[in-house]
Length: 328
Image (tube, rainbow, N blue to C red):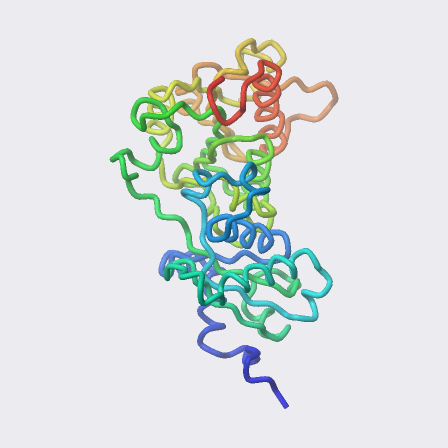
């Protein structure tokens, strides 16, 4: 006999609504996105617990201020058999379930996500991945309205005078990057390098698309992403916040190893896969920086170039004794 508590109809309206999040139109309409697979769901649950449960040993990894501008759980679906292969994820889910269903917790409505076991067939119908991994979260896309202090989202992310805060230490600007794998890899790299934010200009891929989220491997839950900001405004706001603006450019006049101020707060401009940065975009930068090629390859993939540049800044900052995310 089928357990009525298990979602088992792949044609149910709820399943169709979740599946529609694989499309840009569905995401825009519902302001939700898919996080498929153990790693993204693990990070979504971890962030939820940081918000709604006191975890002292996790304070350093996810301070209270760091959850602003990050996604929130809306629903979580799992196949119990598949989940058994990931005991750490099962433990996180049990921990979250304990808070979610604790009558003494008095959680506000936005904290209460829908939790339901589902069959493998239903999870496959909901998801975008070629092969379902047995667990899927639906998360709310963060709002990008003005902050409480009146500053806009870009000013809030970059810091400086407009936000009454210290400037961000490192920011990745994606100018027209369209490949989901590249965008996800850069988001993951920016996260690993300790960047404060990733900003995507018009013409870039939707960072909440399933392929981008899978490629970023959970980093969507670690650092804010901002979309729709034109390059001129991005650069002007970065300068106002005290950041230097560097363009990663194969024809740049300054080789990366010769840059002397990489430890300063920096916005890196990263261009389209096929065409790179336009002449107008290159002209927005303070310096155009090239990465030396020691072998016979014609150029580097933009995600690889981003990794080299972001880590060069991060390591220079660490060597100077400063935190990447803040001004020393």
